[in-house]
Length: 260
Image (cartoon, rainbow, N blue to C red; front, side):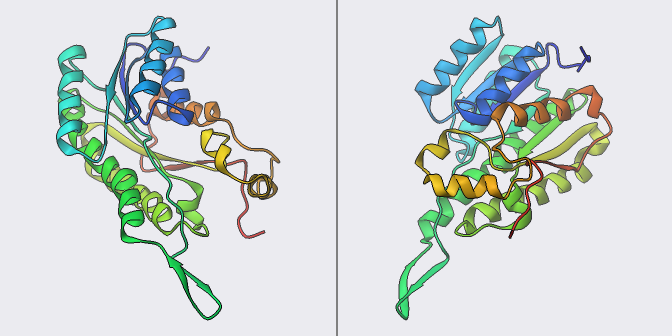
């Protein structure tokens, strides 16, 4: 087994109550890390915490709305009080609220993306990443370095129908990642993004089968990805094996080809 250097490291995973976040928390625990589970869903977050502790992990759960700066800062202080350090931040929390910019039907506007729909996604997916990272970075600097890992998406690279808000956030996350790599490298802090393709998570349960079939059709490997495959990317980027990797965007997408 390759030594990752993650044993006893302190890792924060936002949006850790389900899907990719849950898989990521579990994977870091396998490497011997201590994990803080942050999620707005209290019941699901508590269940993940039980899962981690059942595996012998030193872990905690905090109900977290990443759009509230005060809550984020309080949670970081709580974590430092408990473990005296933080080493890795995985900004995974995100939401989807799809709508066309302007839907035109029979010569008139049928609907638009509303201000509330746009703002809600920006608040969680972009501002939330900013707030969490701003709160954690001083502690990474004080501790001699660390790793920031941000959830982008292939749609942040290529765009996607009906996702003006979501695509804007995922492209913005890439920009912030590259900026932080430049600003924080002198403190031995690495910042990287992961851009998943179509991943089999709980969100697919609300999608029509024809949409899911279309996703698979655009993926050369001919299947959806698994949350565990994204978790592997996060663990590798956080590990000593990736010690010279910063400012990168790692696509984990099955070779997706857009527009075909």
